[in-house]
Length: 113
Image 1 (cartoon, rainbow, N blue to C red):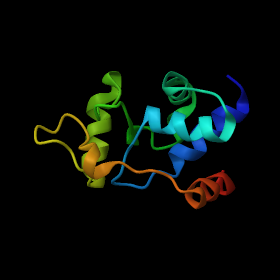
Image 2 (image 1 turned 90 degrees about the vertical axis):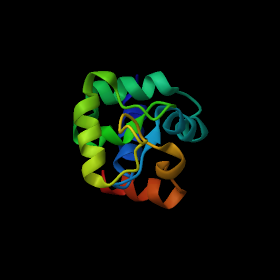
Image 3 (image 1 turned 120 degrees about the horizontal axis):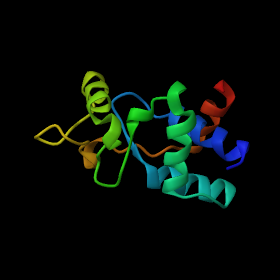
Image 4 (image 1 turned 30 degrees about the horizontal axis):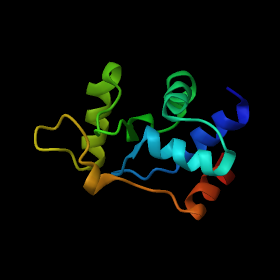
């Protein structure tokens, strides 16, 4: 994985506002449009290896579940931010919490980085 892709993933995840969430697939889709490459698994790899400095807990799978290995911590952080969760609290209520970046949000994150 090249540094440009890694930086773009981290910049995009850094732009996700508190109380909202994105899916690995939506991050990948935005980056495919911008860079012409990558997929949800690559996004997950970036976050697993270099995502400690960004709000990684705001990135969930297509069902709204955080990474299984860090589910308790992620759900605690999501709850603390007021992110809508499903009734049993085990995953994000994506219909209410999904965030999609506009160009300004993405560009602002890149400038902060």
